[in-house]
Length: 324
Ligand SMILES: [Zn+2]
Image 1 (spheres, rainbow, N blue to C red):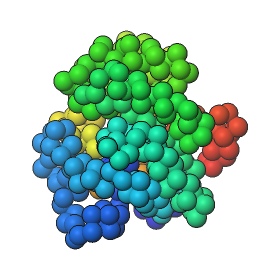
Image 2 (cartoon, protein in one colour):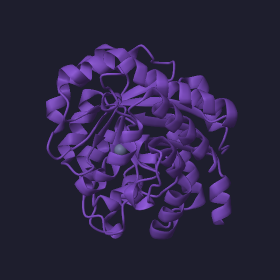
Image 3 (cartoon, rainbow, N blue to C red):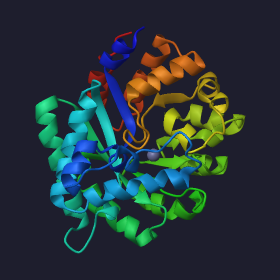
Image 4 (cartoon, helix red, strand yellow):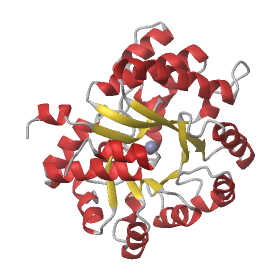
């Protein structure tokens, strides 16, 4: 199968951060200056997650006004359309854009406006996942969730927990996600990216429908069985995971192990700009390194449709993109 056909194949991206996926053009226009791509992208010698996260400083500067949020979101969706993404769940942390001129509601509205403008032009379906940040207090995150819950089914589909996993373990957030459950707010959680496997099992026990990354499940049969039994969607992002050193070497990457354990594996980008990636590139990467077949790649897409945060009618529509 040629690279061309990977490019043309219909796709879903369930784990994609808006701030890490802005286009160079958006950033240059919004900052009104020439931007070197190296300001936005990690190099091959990136050492860890902390170094990786430094690349979010510049794009976040673009997301501090309604205009910036709207423009960046619009151009993001038009950009993913180029590789035939048909449905994307794009995530971001509203509180990182809240300032004295902009409240949480206005932030979410601006992003939804930009996405809707683009959808009218390119036809890509979208939903937004709102991220609580690990370094914020429960009160701040819960306030954000309450505001965003009002947009559920209206452009917002779920909540998430992101940020420094090693410094803030999952047990600190049981209460917050207990509250999310009471709000009937579905959620995914970043877990097992650089932390312990307990972060994954606790996230599942808290009610997470999906896990971002989940690399720490590697070698833990019991934990993998729990995720398989509950049909937890595993949002794998291979290129990003290798850059952040979630695994030390490509040979250690557990995609085959997860598939063999019956986990519901999906293939995602994490950060299109920071990681210089796309779903097509992720597909090519796993084909080359792990011998993933075209049939298996299509299986990942069907898994993504199954665990997406949409209603059954929409899932049915999405599944038609890859007839068996
Ligand atoms: Zn992520």
